[in-house]
Length: 306
Image 1 (spheres, rainbow, N blue to C red):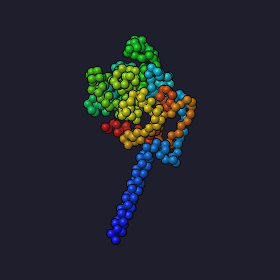
Image 2: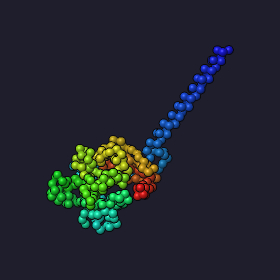
Image 3: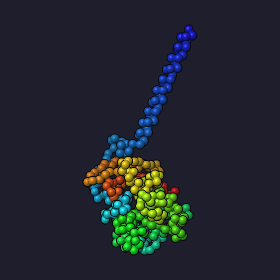
Image 4: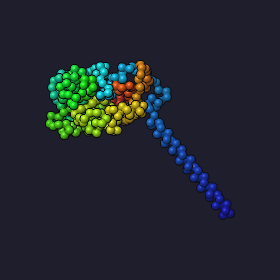
């Protein structure tokens, strides 16, 4: 009788263990399924979602905010921002900072983003900013190159200043490498779509000496990813080409970034209910950034109230 009791006890224990293992396995299955669903791309999130076709032309490889310009990839005429303005004649764009002279030009889009960033710095007590240089056309760049020489200037077409996306920022108080303005820019510019284009630890990659005054607009969310991964622009574009598609979330908004090689005019599909931006890389492809239609508006408001 005792033997039968012992046998029944063992059977019950084994049954309990099996049920627990089965339950544990099901829980793990649900977790794995949840994790997989959370890393799916936006265009795969709903198999019934409608798409729109976007035409991609070869010329688009040379247009946009993510263009790589260096001694290997020069500026094309179609790469120059079409909204370049004289900042001296647009006083609404220059509130909060000064201009070295009345001939400084810049993309109006970039100038507005720069003003937003300067307003944020002013709230933190940093407010002695000055733009020393902005957009230069090829003739101005050529003149500067002849005047300054190869040690201090780049040939026409090989400078980011020929795009309208870059500017040299100074301080009215001190040199940027030691001024509060320089330290603030280095610490915070990425939050507003700007990058320090030639950092101290990336000279071997950029081929340019450390320039704490030279910032470049690439836009969100790209500046955030570059800051997080400590990428120079060269490294970021190579990363996108290798990964093909990545995603990131900023202030609760999801962005999908995809690289497409472009050898001829073609079309791509993007979700119908999302907004999108396209930038060439100035090499051989385009980067398509897809985001919810409220992402940029909401994020700009968040940045302004930080």
